[in-house]
Image (cartoon, rainbow, N blue to C red; front, top):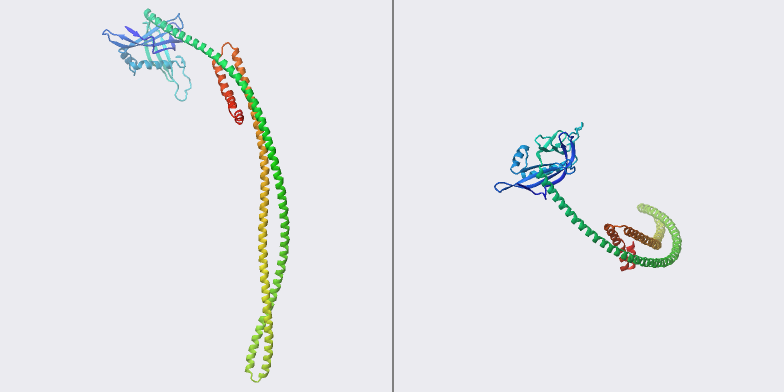
Length: 489
């Protein structure tokens, strides 16, 4: 006797099957295929595993049929040999279910002609389940056919037998028990869902009360927060304007003082520069006169040196003549007279030479004195140029300080403009918060008008309220006024 586990089928689903019946057209329909796992008791009180497959049409009662096929572990060896299977009995059920799963995909008609154009690459495979009832002996063939671009391959072909009255009754009783069990499960699920719905409604009512209370508190806190924020913004704006005016007046006074002091210093420096330029011109004139005197003296010294050189030449000639006269004995007296005359001339020439040497020494002293005065004048000029450069640097530093003060005044004005922009941004944020609060109120009102409230929508409204309004409100209440402005931004 065979016993099957009908409460836990291995496979239970609808498969698109091509039904071929005698004297009828082929048709595609959805058939219910169930695979059961069971046991068979032998004469020796031993048990072996049995696999059973049932194919039936549950949709149309007029054409209701039941085809069954079962195989035991021992009978499977013959089936394996006949069908040339490569799997054993334990794996046969899994592979058969895989083939049925392939049949659940897009159906392919058995009589469809292949395309005249060969597709590029490998063509996708298609599977089809076929139930043929043309057998004269009353048996039916259930086949799994694979269709590719080349031919049709039959993977598996099983001989099903029509179910008798006992098998139909067992099948219907099992389906009735399954339906009753599913009905009880659905009733339990309905009761649990109803209880959850009641709890959800109660929770929704409580949440609605909390939301109303929170909205009221938030409206009060938001009003007080807006008033405090506006007062704080007004006070800060007035303080900033007062500070800006004071700073502007202070820097304007400093700038005027710096302008006056710089103007006086520039005038003094220009006056000193004019005096220095006049002194420089006078010194240049003196230098030109000294250079002219030096040139005259140098020419005079050159003339004296030429005269000295001529006298030396004449003295040498006289000495040579004296030697010649000494040799002439007869003319001694004349030579003595001539010698006296030459001696006198020599003494005169020596006196002139001494006078020329003294004049040359005086000229050298004058030239040296002029050089010393020229060096002192150059040192004075260098000192005055250094002083002028230092004064120009001071003027540049004063102008740089004046520019810095002007930039500071501009920066303070820009800071005031930025603070005005921040105040406008804060006011815009407050308006956006008020607009969002209005939208929340409309959403809650629309939820209250419906017969059934959605818990998801209510939860979303609560999350929006907690994430958008409450943090800003609590931040404003518990923080300082500067932090309040940062929160609204």
